[in-house]
Length: 613
Image (spheres, rainbow, N blue to C red):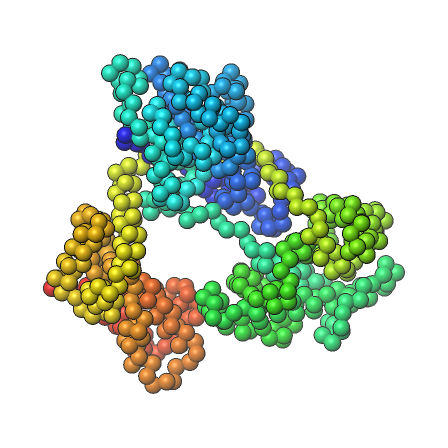
């Protein structure tokens, strides 16, 4: 059956939730929630968290409202037609059911049920859902109903989770494609079904938007880097006296020490943090493709003198650019215990909130005391017994009076290796009721969705097929940047069609979208690196180019090897702009820039020459 794809623009599943955009009452609700540190620092929850572990009542209510008011109903109009809601996980599915029962109490427990692997008698529920006369109208599914069921009466599908696999997406769409005669009465057959997409799946497969996947969370290494950097910044703002690097270790001051002693301890702490970050940067692998564009920064911040004084611009660069870079430092030091490193993050954040006088210190303090209580319960373990006095101190209110950063640092160093002895506790979901925004529903072009997907599938199949047949003569000529004849391209098209890779329509579209079939094939198989090197050999022949200039040319070779062609306009975008922020003119002479652009145009024209012949 054909379908009507409806894009449902709910704001939170698409954009996340920002503290700054909330009302005053909602901000008060936000501040009472037990956020993880990265969320608290950023003041926002990314879209990937919505319905994964953050469940917002208004978001679900608005999604249900769309289904109940815009979805296909039975002939009488009194009951919703059979519908499947694809939920993100079991907790999300249960939350959807709870909100449905709350909003429709007269249908509670009957019209909407969760059907997944975690419910008892799931097959009985599927049988009930398959009964056209049953009261069960909405099946809230987590994976179980994605494939393998054949219920012709299904007329509404609700995508309440992101799906970025084309195969899985079309399998899920297949739940609504079954024909159903007399569904709306004698002679009134099912003519189509509705897809309500709340997570930009339709736009993604049409190439009109939608992230590849929910945004990846910051790595623990990145978060640790930024927390140490923030501590350095906060200590620097106190204008403490400098501490010589030769001081061997951090002395823990007592409560009776003079303010100058406390300041000296903080100054030493600042030096220790800076040295940790310097070593982290120094261990960034220069050959890593993520690190390579930022080698100048890495070289700068691997020097001790760069950390003596950090400007606001330095902090911004370190936090935004350097912190996410991969580093081998933890592995080199054998410090890969994730539990210990998470404890580091908690203690660094405690130190930071103490220095800044932030109210969330009390919540973080309680987290530390909870961990201490769990360790105390394991006092029979020798490693815990050795630190039992400190652990019990943390549970006493007296210890926390006039607590200092050096005292917290001592706790971090002494207890971090014990964290793996505590039984892990799964993350509890958070429930909110912030006001979401529902934009105007938009019906997309189903034919374009099918055509676009067919073309994408052709592109993927052609790439795999041609990779397995790199010895084909035309392929060899194309990859080596040798001009092709129309006969060469016709032979290549025949070769693909004869092996069932695509259709004539897909091949025609490939030529139209890429300004020629030769450029399309080049874009998916790339250019032989040696062929690209030969073209730039004369450019580099005089041997007077700087290291940065050579890196710039190597980035061009990387792109040509991967994508086959390159628009000269790309020279002003990353990763090229990382090496030459003002453009290639800031790195090369005008004549050299013209030469580079001419070489790029030559590579493109050779792949297009056959089309003009």
